[in-house]
Every structure is written in structure tokens, then in C-alpha cells.
Length: 319
Ligand SMILES: [Zn+2]
Ligand SMILES: [Zn+2]
Image (cartoon, rainbow, N blue to C red; front, side, top):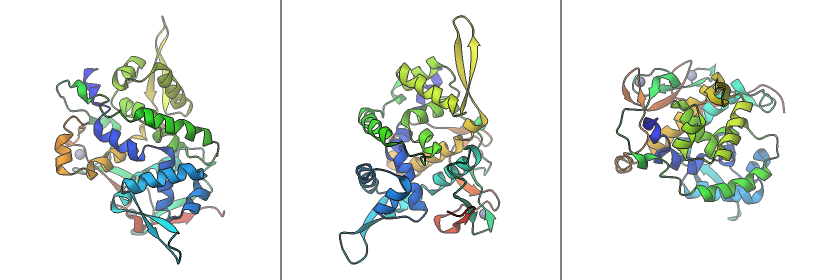
């Protein structure tokens, strides 16, 4: 298992600090839908005022949203996506697609389908390798063979205590059933890290503990949740004493492109100097072409990259 020591790396962890949060994902989705004002975010996400203010402040500080006055009064402000924020759009597209495909639909049927204006087809976003253009499959991505480097593990987890405190208050507010399952899964830091580890081959409790340095009660709560939501299947691999392993289902495997798109957003935002500093970071190899993994998101029909201005909504039900 030593080769898996790189799983929790600085590049992914730093991205999670910014976007790996359920509320932030919901706010960003609203931004992509053209919403820009405090009250609009309140109405569509159901976030409390205090939490929304904190998240917006954080997104402005991270240069994902720009705050600017609108209307006559200088007191009124709106929040617009920056260039950095707009680059999150492919992640949102993939997440949207995943929900359409895998959630029961109670929360989303009333929503809309995505439509690619450029090719006039319903938009089905797909992650591809930037080098060879082949569709990204979890079975075709691997870690490079590297010397063991223990500092790659969990180095970027210093802010975790702070984050958990924020989360527990948020979770109490999370009673609104409009909350999205995708945000619950990838907007929780531990769940996301468990998923990343599983994509790279970790299946058993001891593997997760070794990789993530995660407390066993937190680990079992997250594993149970992932089984309950159909992302993992629990299989007994030993009878005496009983021991189980957790196998990714198709539903779980289809989260892979979304999480790789999150990684790509972080990597693409790093300058060359930053990149050379992150030599401990998680490098992945796309096996079919042998190149270091970089991905793009394309429209399945026309293979161009859908941008914010050429994706429309096709209403499937009246609200
Ligand atoms: Zn490739
Ligand atoms: Zn298209």
C-alpha cells in the first residue's frame, strides 16, 4: 500500500479548502444560472444569512467572485464570477449530469435540462484526456511509480479543525430537502478524500486509515453513508473475524470525472513556480497515452468545450 501514500496531496487539498463545501457548491451553481444577488442566493439555496455572508466573503477573497455595486444605491452589491470562478463551470456541468443520471429525481425533475447552443443538442458533458482526447475512465488512471515519500501524506490538513467546526454548525442548518446529493458527497472533505482513495484502489478500513489518518468513527460513519447512497457496495472478505471491504459501484465510479475536474481546476490555476513547488503532489498517469493526466470537459455530441455563454436551459417542467 505504500504507493498510495500520495493520495492526500497539497493540490487537491488546497482546492477543497475553496470549493469542497456543500454551500459553496450550491452558491456557485446559482452563479452559473445567472444569479448574482444576496437575496437570490438565499431564496434558491436556503442558506442562512450568516452562512451565506461568510461563504460569499470567502469566494470574493479567493478571487472566484467579484463584488460590485449595482443600481442607484452604492449599498447594493452583486456577485459576478471572475475568470477563475468561470473555470469552475465544467465541474458544475459534470455534477449536474451526475445528479440527472443517479439521483431519484425528486429534487431535480422540476429543474431543467442542459442544452448546448453550439450544436443544438441536449448537453451531455464528458471528461476527456487533454492529450489523447479519449474519454476518462477510472480504470485507466494510475499513480506513477515513485519512491516512497511520507510527507506527501496529509501535509495540507492544517486547516481541518477549523473547517470541521464550521461544518458542524452548517450541518444543523441542513434540513432543507432541496439540498443536493452531489454536494453532500463531494462537499464533505472526508467523503471526498475517501472517494479519491477508493479511485486509487483502497478498499479496506486499514487502507483508509493509513492513507487519510482518519479517526475510525468518522471513517465508519462516512463508509456507511457511501454504502447507503449506493456509491460503495460492502463485501465480506473474511469471516473470522468478519471484515468487509468497500467496492465502488457504477454510481460511485461515475463520480470520478467530477473529482478529476476539481483537481484539474486547481492544477490549471497554479503558476509554473507553484507547480514546481508541488512536487509532492498527486501526479496521475493516463495509461492509454502514458501522459501525466490533464483533463478537459467536452460536449459528447460535438466535442467542443461548452462555455458559460453557449449552454442553455431547456425547461422540462413548469415551476
Ligand atoms: Zn490520454
Ligand atoms: Zn455540442
